Image (cartoon, rainbow, N blue to C red; front, side, top):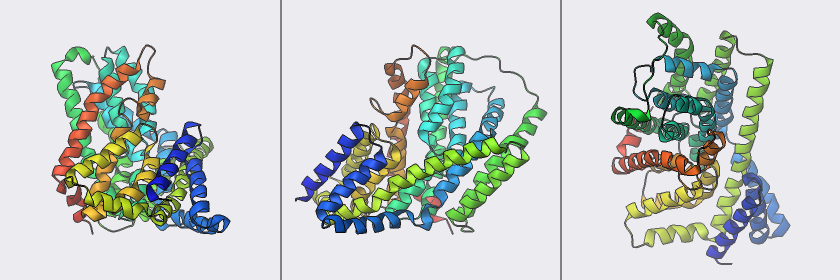
Length: 437
């Protein structure tokens, strides 16, 4: 069978299974089984598949994934994350478009805790959107910032998606975690800048209101108690990784331990919180690891069928500039992001894209972080971005999909601008990782 026919049948089978409602992990397993049976000598090839599955998840590099998920889950279920947002709100009373800015700031905070875009959209959308509309905010100003905040969840370390991307791509977890810091902060600043300027130019879209006056002493006290300690945990994790004092796995374990200590000190850790926190973290971790089990087999099937070598050769011989090839790869990611979630996109594309990246001589860290910005943008790209439908499900009555599409467009353009800057100035991504020990 020609490689292109194998690839076509593989993705056709995957698409059919997903359309009839089969979970992504099971769909990958089934098409991998069919491919192994055909290419690896029938039933005897299943032994190799088992070894591939075992090697794909039995690696020290992936240990930070459940650790970071558990850390965020405990902070969320213990109420630490919600209290952080409340304290942040106390300091934004003077800012134009206050609640919209709060959505971006809260998204950045939740990003350090959960790393899940759609989870961030669901939480902030259900709490902040009704309040913004009650205050007279235009739909585009109440919905758009919530959608944008979800993207920050995967661009603010510690990011589970960054770890998964690095482990599948075979490059440094520590460097990609440090490399996403500057783009993540820059994206937050660009979004906040847009909101503030728009609120100043069109005050009717984000009406000012009298915020409760909280004494400075109380704000400082609340910040010192409820905001500084959790942020210090995240900063400590990043610092340990940056200076080479600890591996990402060791830093994740220490951060998770300190999160439990914080929950105890706040008197928020009880049996119910423990069961919910560990239960949800286990469920999410298992889902991610099951998806990853298909990675090694998929990569090997691509190589065995000749698809990897053929695609790499085809890409290198295309009569187009390398920049256009990079853009085409990003367009594919946006298209996939309309239908499947981010971890699955990484699983599908990395085995195909990474040989091309090496062939072109691009830095895989640089490419991976551009890809992450694109992945978060894909979830809010009309007409089928997954976060758009999450927003529709929790939006106030009377909100049409066209309202959500319009609200997302300015923030999609901001993401495209950030990607263009990263492509034009690679040092924006690579400078900080180059300074690591």
